[in-house]
View 1: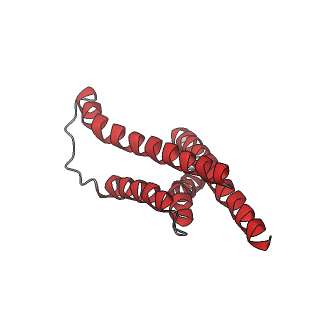
View 2 (view 1 turned 90 degrees about the horizontal axis):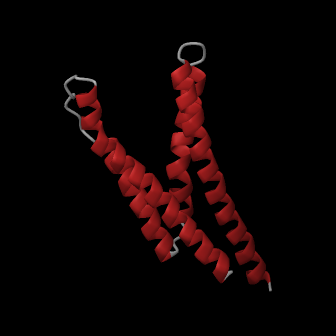
View 3 (view 1 turned 30 degrees about the vertical axis):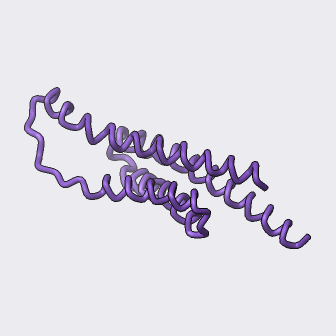
Length: 134
């Protein structure tokens, strides 16, 4: 049980830090994109990326504290973009090949992380129930 718990903690930390690094990287590189396109950058409020970063950090902290809600936060933070990607894939049917490719890549990556995280929590739940029954 200890080994799986450490493995899950390692997975959550790696997945959440990697996703957080992608969010920060995209925020930092966005002004450069507008310079390359020779257009003016619109005034933006970065509420959604900040909420995403906050949820990723919250998921790590909850996993370190071993709370039961950590399961829902760590699965949900990757399930939401998966659902968005599926919706984008469906909506862009026949209109934009680029949007469909983006949705496929984003959805595939997020679905994979969601599935692995869910399996980590499901496997540990089986371990806990078996040890409680003994």
